[in-house]
Image 1: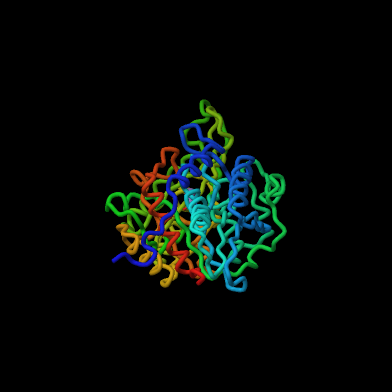
Image 2 (image 1 turned 45 degrees about the horizontal axis):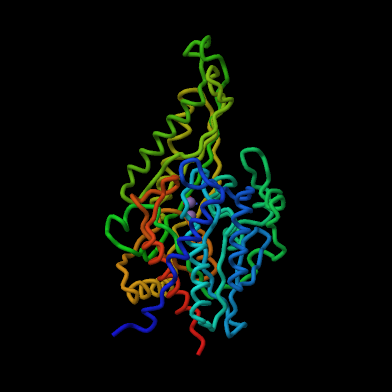
Amino acid sequence: MAAPGENLRINGERLWTSLEDMARIGPGVAGGNNRQALTDEDAEGRALFQSWCEAAGLTMGLDEMGNMFARREGTDPEALPVYMGSHLDTQPTGGKYDGVLGVLGALEVMRSLNDLDIRTRRPIVAVNWTNEEGTRFAPAMLASGVFAGVHGRDWAYDRADAEGRRFGDELERIGWKGEEPVGQRRMHAMFELHIEQGPILEAEGRDIGVVTHGQGLRWIECTVTGKESHTGSTPMPMRRNAGRGMARITELVHEIAMAHQPDAVGAIGHVDVYPNSRNIIPGRVVFTVDFRSHRPEVLAAMLEAFEAKAPGLCEEIGVGLETEIVGQFDPPAFDETCVATVRRAAERLGYSHMDIVSGAGHDACWVNDVAPTAMIMCPCVDGLSHNEAEEITRDWAAAGTDVLFHAVLETAGIAG
Ligand code: HGY
Ligand code: MN
Ligand code: MN
């Protein structure tokens, strides 16, 4: 006997076409995307998303952080809406699906509700969160963090990119700074569909990841200071090479994460060397350490080990070290009711599924502070992400969006 609504499915072909159309904006150099936050390419992607939302009869709201909220009315306008969404901004060498699947999957749910002429009791809202990646403007999940009250709006406006351009000025420049006060919206619940960005679902042969928890994160910005001098004529004992400080800390970060396996990861992904000239010993190196774990005590232990050892490694070679935490959140546990709704939806639809912890950070991690939130994951090929070769299959995209559709429909309620 088919379960109620089991046959309700989204239009996978239309979803895939929209993903391909969006991927044409801000193309990378190797088949992926470079649509970084608050660039002209980001603005173009936003405009395309807005045009699709308007064509689907949705009403667009825009807040002071550029977060986009496309609303479909319910029969009870007073009921708190059900939200679903993710982010359209990408890494500089990003894939076509990280974040984008969650935003366009939400749009596909809206389009499918229209096709099926379904009225929900609660309004439903599709969201594009600004600057999830945090690659141009640290920290990651910046706008959802302001929405959740974690960061102040003006502090966020003052975040600057490598060229010193302010977030607030760039948001104004691309014309996507709204009037709506950020964070005033109240949500009944929020669901985020996202690719796993790891190898587990594919390796286990599962279509759906039911995300119960996320990893906590600490981003430590380090500045190692030595002395610029000639690489040819400066005797070795006289050198104060900031590059060696960065090398020693790179190895320390790896050792600390390995000492806490399997519940820890650590790496350095961003490095600026000054003056970055082939024949000048680096006088200053600025880089960001990225530690993560889903266990709070492991995250604390990694930080403690870093603080205990990193300064000495630099002192030994005559260079200075300054550190600053530029991004952090504790391991989130998602809302059990919403998580159970996701699991039930996967069951009803006949998709294989497993509970999973999210390795990456997501806007849902912050929204979880202010509203019942859960995530749905689909596999990605070889678990590869934050790489232009990121790939998913059409079936995985459709399965994830079907589960999003059912979870949102059940939570919003079908009007009689
Ligand atoms: O860093 C993260 O985990 C996310 O991709 N912004
Ligand atoms: Mn993402
Ligand atoms: Mn990402």
